[in-house]
Amino acid sequence: MPVSFCKRLVSSRLAQSPWQSLEKLISSGSVLIFTRCINSFQAFAALRDGHITSDPAIESRRSLYTTTIFPTLAKAGVASATLTLAWDFTVMSTTAQTGRMMSMREDAFARTSGGIDYVVVKKTDKPQRNVARRIDGEMRAPWYLNQGEAGQGARLVLDPTNPNRAVNNGEKWIPFVVMIPEAVANGSVVGHPMSYGHGLFGDRTEIFEDFLVEEANTYGYVVFATDWLGMCKEDEVALALMISESLTNFAMVPDRLHQGMLNALLMMRLGSSAVFAADPVMQPLGIRTINSTQRFYFGNSLGGIMGTVYMALSTDVTRGVIVVGGAPFSLLLPRSNDFTPLFDVLKLR
Image (tube, rainbow, N blue to C red; front, side):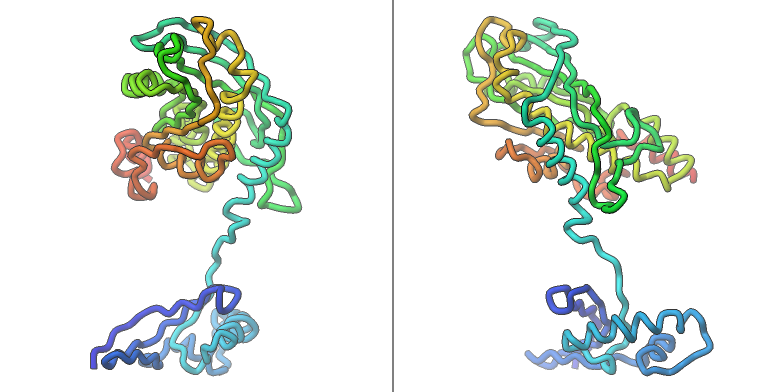
């Protein structure tokens, strides 16, 4: 009779909270039988069988097991006498995972429902082949961080009564850049707004890479971008200091990424607005260049990873392209040339 070991997960669907018990799985033909394993760990056995000990590490856990773990498993049909090992662990709820970002999006969209203010800082005609005009500007966006610049102390400002809700901390002017290709400017193709997500430690100016210019010119896109705060060029020094000095400040990365994501969502709202499309600066040859009946996203590398979040959050874009999105950061970063300098610092710790 072949014998193997497995983990049995009693999920929240059965018991309100996730629990794990380790049991022996015996397979006999098509019949699977769960039975008790070989001798339990002595500490767990004392908890399971009600044996009082003089060990404070065991006794400090007894109440948790007797009032919560064992009763919850029993309700799910798992008798404590059958257990070899059981433990609880903390997981994140949907609210804990998404609450801060969702609260930022809803609050910011409400604050900008009448439109988003912007200024054109500079316009450059024919800066390179197939580009009719480059526009550098700034938009005024709701701000949810405790400081304006990158740094180890950067954190979201949270509701003191609800840690899953970020609260507004004023406004900040966010740099953006727009690329109008020649074929769109002269009316050869219809121009649709497309938000671009740059790669790791890059910035918004990646939209002027030749491959993207050619694509926009051929298929008709007016491309714009902001920076992915948290993992853009602006963050490199702060990240290096955090890695070398105090990893406990890692929260600066996801917190700034929240604001960077919000900026990208707001940029699409601005870039596809009627006011923006009617601005003469968006019409190099006097022809309207933006048709907002369709809106798109295109992201490379980090922009591919963040693009999955963008597409999930956007209420304006239904079609996006995710390019070389890679894998979990724990697998991707050690293989990234852009991360090499920071990885070297990390390995010295």
